[in-house]
Image 1: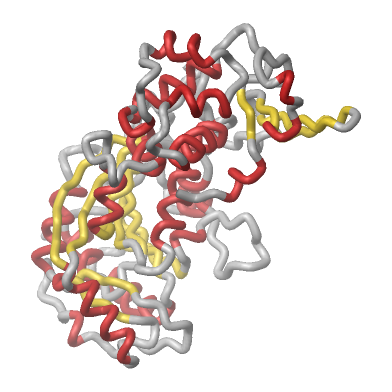
Image 2 (image 1 turned 90 degrees about the horizontal axis):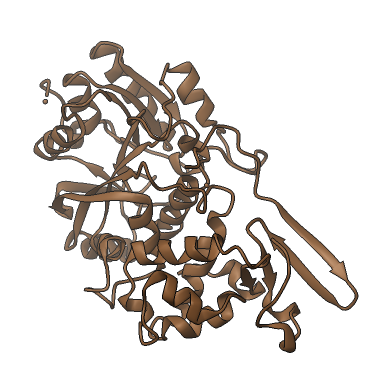
Length: 396
């Protein structure tokens, strides 16, 4: 069993040039399909992660920011805050909660009243003084950081400010790092912003599979309010073929997923960073959002996510395989195998116990993981994957 550890080196990517042909070595062994002569595309031999009386949100000071207009949802219902707290502070050992974009702090207050230690990561600096004041009133178990949660551990340190490294959270606030096979070191709770939601969902997936950012320190639990459609996609399987995507497979392979609660958007307030929605088109967009529901889901990384054949080093090949498969979602698996790997397709089908007629949308998440590991552990092939350049930027 492979065990993830802190400080893993980045995935190796080497290139070898030989005459007119070029082969790209992608950790587990992958050659770019366009570089392989047609006569050698079979049999190829190549290369080889509870509430005190308090002000309501309406009574709070007018939050005015000169920043960009970006709508965000905030919990304004004490009842909903209590519901969330009951789910978060179950009978387990983890009472450390990171809340991103807490805004006016309705949920923050409820968590503190129930004995949790809260790290509030707020990207709008106009909320910071109120949150710091709230922490002083309620026992000092609130730590406030001015930071965008989705920009933790940025790769480009000269671009995004303020810069916060996850190492700060764990070392300075005394969060205990736990091995992947043990318990939960930290619970994260928040509401996805309405902007760039899909990109943020993919960022979290990459963090989990690569054991980077918060996931260097163990199986961090995510408790997220997300729009209903994305929730359905994440939880879809072959019984919901129209919603079943690579995203569904990757989340279900990585995490145990629970739908904890469904709440109408009227329980949330939607504000831009200017404190109001002034333009007609923003009002219209806001009304559309209020007619929808938000789903509160819990995503807990699986203890057995990583094996000797699926690791933080080769996970991106797994991502590539799934994206390629779902590009032609109605095709048969065997047709995809011929463009994914030089290994004999019939031999792979026999090992994973699938039929020649099996379609991609009939494969369950665990079937895709089995397929990937079967190809990875093939003994008679040095090169196990064929890799297309155009797939590198595809996001499904």
